[in-house]
Amino acid sequence: MNVRNCRRCGKMFNYVTGPAVCPACREAAEKKFEEVKEYIRQNKTARINEIAQNCGVEQRQIEQWIREERLIFASDSPIKIYCETCGAPIFTGRYCGNCKKNQANTFNSAGRPQGGDPAGDGGNKKPGSGNRMHTFRE
Ligand SMILES: [Zn+2]
Ligand SMILES: [Zn+2]
Image (cartoon, rainbow, N blue to C red; front, side, top):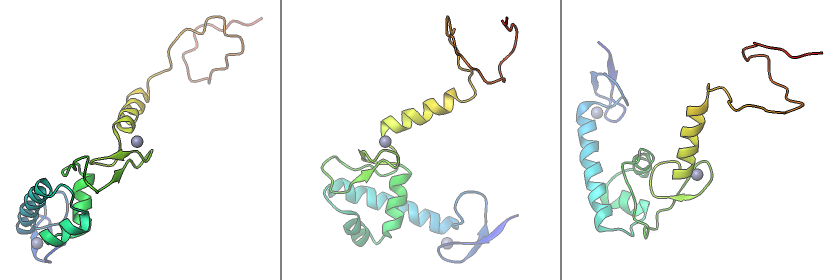
């Protein structure tokens, strides 16, 4: 059993996984989240500090929900979020669609050998990691 102190209220609880927050505080945070979501729906032009004040939530908590893509803002919201990679304006999360796609591509192609047939490629210097079947030399 893994007993920890809640990061929010300091109470001891049986820690399972995720942030070190006790079930009561977690539930309270979920309620707050619903409240914030509702507030944003009704106040599309509210700024983060207004939301924080009116809902009694820390600004940091709201920003965290944004990064987790749980809060999405309308295009006419004054809240501007920017892609952490290229700086493009986005409405939720940390990266724009393009960068997400690029990241996925980079991830997928990692470990895949570079294919293609280098037909007639003269000075083609390959690292010695490939499978050597034939070596044409004079
Ligand atoms: Zn707690
Ligand atoms: Zn981007």
